[in-house]
Amino acid sequence: MNQAQKEKREQQLAIKAEKLKAYASEVVRQSETRIVIDNRPYDLVSNYRDGFEIEKLTERFSQILTKYDYIVGDWGYDQLRLRGFYKTENKKAYRSQCIDTLEDYLYEYCNFGCSYFVLHNLEIQKPEPVSNPKERKKTIKPVGKRRKPVVKAHTAEKKYQIKNKKPKAPLNKTKPVKTQKNVSKPAPKRTKKHEFVIRQKDKS
Image (cartoon, rainbow, N blue to C red; front, side, top):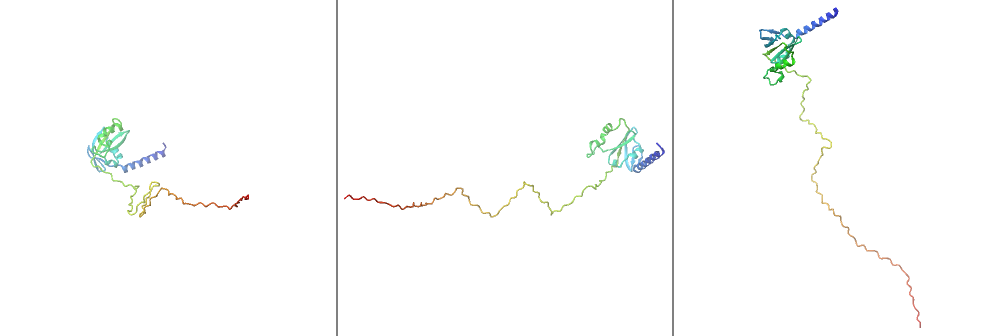
């Protein structure tokens, strides 16, 4: 690493330290068991293998942890990890988020025999609701205007009622019998024939 890279690395570390200092919390140890973080009191109920360190807690503490009843800090690879737990009586919390499952958490997620500590929050800070700007405002529709009913094709049939309709006469399905008229046949025409009379002569 040359001189220019070394100076650049030192500048990055200095900027990172300033950011951590700006967001760092104020941790004061008033007694063996009483800890004050950002003017909020906590009790140190467990400190297994001297896992509690003020300097690391100052760097790692976040305001989101103030809503939990207990804060557990465990060590792994020289890094402090913090996690919040609710009291056992909290019915809104999941089973895995309650403090009585601490042994299961240490067994499943922490290194075997690691150092850890437990803080009891004496002043729980409820998070303020954050308004979501993406939420659409509900518009109130006027009562007078109503949507027209949608009629599906070939599913609705309109029926009309006709008033003062005269009843139809019953139809006689029998066919009428035709009456035959007496038609006189014309007389045959007589033809005029010449009649001859043969007279016999007298033999006198």
